[in-house]
Length: 119
Image (cartoon, rainbow, N blue to C red; front, side):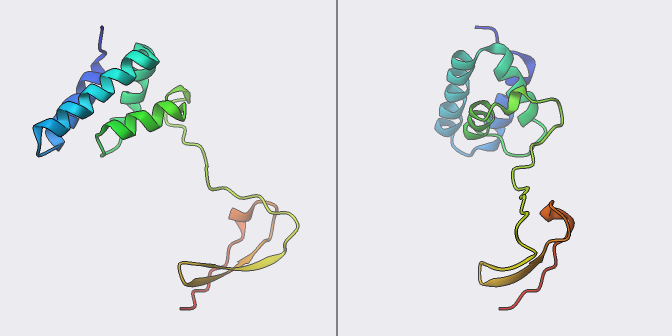
């Protein structure tokens, strides 16, 4: 099995980041299992993407591969939280005991958000 340089660097970071040898061993075994399952090119791309972050574990690589984020253009991050609302001109929502008044000025909700927190 040929392991690319990004996979090697990522596994080095995993090994440095844990206090217990068994945890690092299991995480690296899991990454090698993903390497075998998804192939060298995809695991290399996933590790390259993950090296830009600061969390080094098996779950990060697994999430990148299962979400196909390794196949996106370099630096592209999908906007997972962009909402499109066309029928509402204003709405009040509560998140974590904070009340927000949303005022929609355009079809794209992100262009007109007014926030008022009320505990």
